Amino acid sequence: MDWMLFMWIALIVVGFVLLVKGADWFVDGAAGIAGKCRIPPLVIGLTVVAFGTSAPELAVSVTSAIRRATDISIGNVVGSNIVNILLILGLSALVKPLPVQKSSVKLDLPVLLVASALLVGLGAWGGALSWWDGLILLAVFACYMTALIRETLRAQGETPLPPAEPVHGVKGKTWFYAVLTVVGLGMVVGGGTLLVDGARYVAERFGVSERVIGLTVVAIGTSLPELVTSVVASAKGQTDIAVGNIIGSNIFNIFLVAGVSSLVYPLGFFEGNLVDSLVALAAALLLFVLALAGKFRLTRAAGGIMVACFAAYYLYLFLVPA
Image 1 (tube, rainbow, N blue to C red):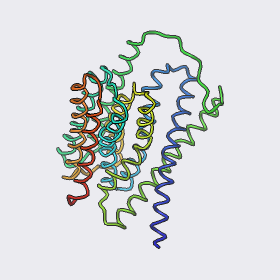
Image 2: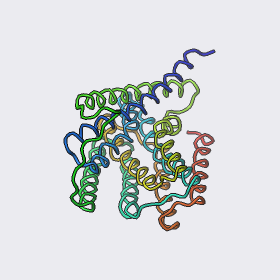
Image 3: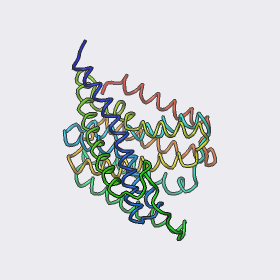
Image 4: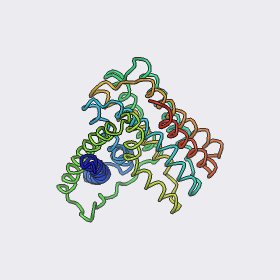
């Protein structure tokens, strides 16, 4: 038995657990601190919580960039977006048709399409995402978040702020929120490091490219929280915000995760990366078309189409040489 391989697989699992639980604790702690500072819950949801859902992808991609495993970094971003749309929303729609909020179709989905097209264009233009491309992505992201917060607050109107909600049964303890935030962030970083190192070892051991590992094992692993949450919520009939959350997470992945990662180290953008990014763009376009065709709903038929497209893409990954 190859004990070294067994050890690295075990460390990958530990890395996934640390990523998921660390992101959970980080969000709880940061939201608790924000609540103590009397920041509107709406703003917390649009920033802290949304950032938390992308924390695993950010940790993995930045760690990959630091370790020069750029195929894992790009594959994680693009692969997570493909998994989020085609697999997670597809499976959720198969369980129960999903409503798509009109605001998502009018604002968020077009922004996701622009972000996906921008990723393809910037990557193909110079053959890599450089620090300059990263600054462009982050600048567009800042504009989007500013516009989103302003528009949402305007739509909500002025409402009294509720007292800070207790986290894990501990109410009003600022020090606890701070510790939870720091520990959660440390777990995310540590989990990302274990995951990247383990994925690289397994890729070398089995002769699989880092690109494929990033698009499959790493991408699905970092999307596990969204997968479990969305499918369970769909089964329970709690489908109101499922699509919006996925779209928001994908926007964060491109603008924030890819943007920050490319500041750390240039992310090579080769033929395979271009194909994968085009698939992510096509997935976003498919979601937009299916939402309009279903009159702001993702039907079971739409879910079946999305899952079938996901299966076809994965067959391509493993059957066509990298």
